[in-house]
Image (tube, rainbow, N blue to C red):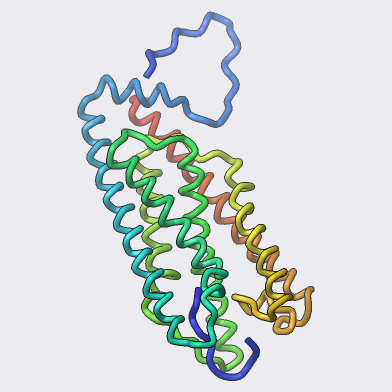
Length: 270
């Protein structure tokens, strides 16, 4: 995020054997068994063909999103270079920029698997969900900044690159994530993703607060104690953003797991 605020203010396996009579059912781990899905696809060539076509289309879509994100990053960097006092290192200190770069890597990897494999590695489901949340949070935070700017009579410039970074790409990424969930051939996103999603933002927050206290510059107004009424104000905003991270991730994980179970039952004819 690098829009400038102008104006006043501070800076398969085979099918399982039948269970023995009277045996206790296997515990529900909440994770669908991949061999069931593989077996269904193996005995239904038409289903396999449909899945392959859908996966390839999704792979091309993921690749296109990565290209758009790269264009947006380059355009945004060129935009900030127009301000001679803006240090390049500050550009790479925005959460939006760092998460966009991470999204490019994950999207390219996910595109490769979708174009060449019948399903993604289990760990990729978590990473795709995490970067989708990061992109969505970047858009939400940018909207909050726009609201804050309007209440303080600031003029917020939004170049085309920021529009791509904060609005277009997050929507496209959510669409790609949803399509994958609907296709339902990948393992369900693990609940542990809700905790993992906070690892990178927590590290970034520590870096930003330490660096900001040293150089007197913060990428977002709500991290500057001088602009939000002290460190209590900073803490309140951080908790709010934390809740957004956890809330969005919880929703996506829950939706993906539900659609994954439904997809397995559909293909199994149940």
